[in-house]
Length: 85
Length: 170
Image 1 (tube, chains in turn orange, blue):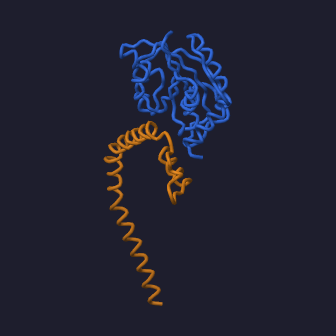
Image 2 (cartoon, rainbow over the protein chains, first blue to last red):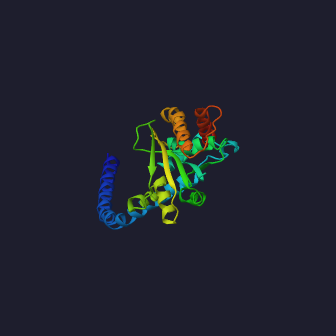
Image 3 (tube, each protein chain N blue to C red):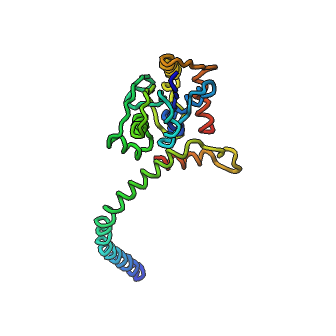
């Protein structure tokens, strides 16, 4: 019985530690959202646009992908599609 | 006779966007005055400077899918137009705008088809492929105004489908 009670107490203590850590991290997360996001978002958007332009102007043919040995062409196409979208 | 060039624009990797490019690839097999500008944008300006008349083949997203229109292009270098450079593709009006800025004054026309889908890695839609003979007929009429004869052998629709198969490796 004692060991069950101890285990329960331990779990309760762990929950409290986790809650304390969450409270500590929350301000850091809020700080990141208020400081980093406004700067990073426009850069990320511009980067996405530039990458899109490069892909549009340069990727005009799937080339000789089919002739490569051991290539999953459908998988490759899916990955290219993800880059486009 | 005025110097004339037919220019196909677009990227076949983006579905119907590549219609003009694929049609130009096919027509250039029989006509030396047809040039595939593909998705090279401003990079093709050097190929356009020596001509009195330019006829572009391209899509126009303002048209319903498969609809064909012939438009006169005046050329524009307005801020909204130049910003389109960032939106990947360069419209013919912007290319002509740059030519005017370079002191060239070609008469320019666009024979456009309305796209149905710009889905990456998809072939041309049925609507756009079916519109190809009408685009060719309009091109033939426009070329006749300047004393040029368009030669087309075989099935233009099959030619476009083959272009997409080649590019997409399907």
